[in-house]
Image (cartoon, rainbow, N blue to C red; front, side, top):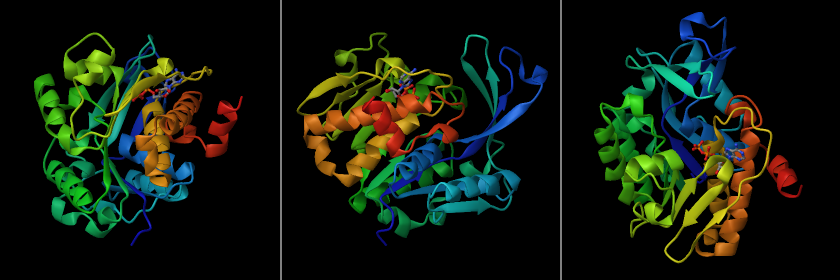
Length: 320
Ligand code: ADP
């Protein structure tokens, strides 16, 4: 089938976010349920912007898993790639909001259902239908979902999809920093499009300088587009033929969760509509302005999924 343009692979989970910041988990007076998981956020971002998206991943056959599947459906994301594990439970994250605004996560992954996705369970027809296959997150860390991740990438590539990678470094989940760097870079050559944050750029290169020279250390001949997102400083882009920067929008930021996923979703949505933007700097800059606008809007509301914009909202911000 060619129903799906963008297939996003990985985990979906629930963040339990305390109602107040600056206290330990045990002292939190209450929690809000915030659905998330970077690959699921990207699928929903695409769908909100009018694109066709599917999510491929495994949920627990429990209250939380069914809640997450409903959220995908309500947002127009195809559920053809969702599996429910009979034994394991849906992944959960317990967030601490530190007084300085940073977040700390404790994960329920014991193992959680997402980690138990096996290569032979993949809906290969769905993956073969992708024009863009997006991946990258904690599914690379452990078996069997690691093998499923690698197989899905291979099948998507063989069927001609563009591969899009966001490493989404979650350092505490890796056995060590060295292992994280090694594994993330081991699949670097396979992608066509890679997006890293400034923190990931620093981590992967070992350089404290966020500049073009550092970014070029992550360039590979097979790549089509490398992006570095810089929060309120916007984003930078690198291709074989040109590179540059696009400023961020000034907005009233309350919670940056999901900004990167919103940015990626917006970019992929536009690439599916017109792959020629990858070769045309002025078209690419226009798309990155749009992606920056989507990222900025996502920071103006609490949570990731509820804050992902519609196209009209992004255009309203751009056109002031
Ligand atoms: P990640 O969530 O992966 O760390 P960023 O925080 O860099 O990614 O956000 C992605 C994009 O969203 C940025 O490139 C920028 O355009 C936009 N964005 C993020 N934070 C802000 C902010 N505080 N103000 C305006 N735009 C922002």
